[in-house]
Image (cartoon, rainbow, N blue to C red; front, side):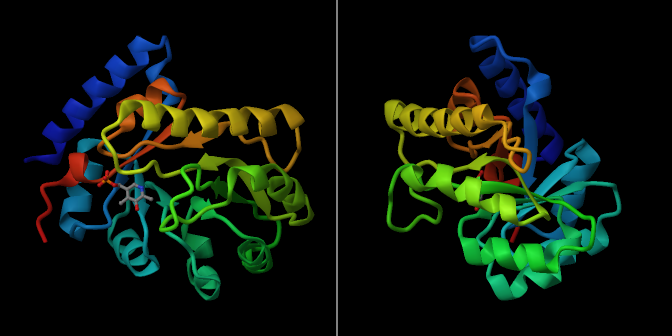
Length: 228
Ligand SMILES: *Cc1c(COP(=O)(O)O)cnc(C)c1O
């Protein structure tokens, strides 16, 4: 499949999901997740009009970024090892996986003077042991505590839903993240505008949009079937 054809189908679905709940398509950012595919395939996505790209490994991100000169916006969506922060911090526009104080400290230490690093705080809404992220009840105090790190801006919350077909489980998961987002937003903390919700992948993005997602992270539906 051409990426352009996949993209057209996804855009139609985004439009539909937005219509279902009276949202504007403008409010949805599609992040093309290119972690499984070649640089060529990632370039095809950019040529088709995907301007936000997501990678979950430093090596993959740096390799692709070096080859793709497009003014693309880069999202780091994988878990970050603290010792790798310094390698990648100047190359990313958003980190979706801030999940611990030690990582916040490291980001703050490595950020350039006067720079602000846009972070999503990752939440493990479903409580699955295999998933990264904060327990929902810890999120508010964690976000509040980040005010001491002048280079960190909390732009939103991120979660990965369980890999299930049960629509109600998915809606509950996404709805809980939205409620947490609302709670933080209402605080009006300067370091944490927290407007965004990064949630929804290939198998559940329409539901995520209906539940308030602003950033959907789509790999297989967009750039698959994988060519490597
Ligand atoms: C791989 C990945 C995605 C994309 O997954 P698909 O199911 O291929 O759309 C989204 N978010 C994260 C954090 C990922 O690691």
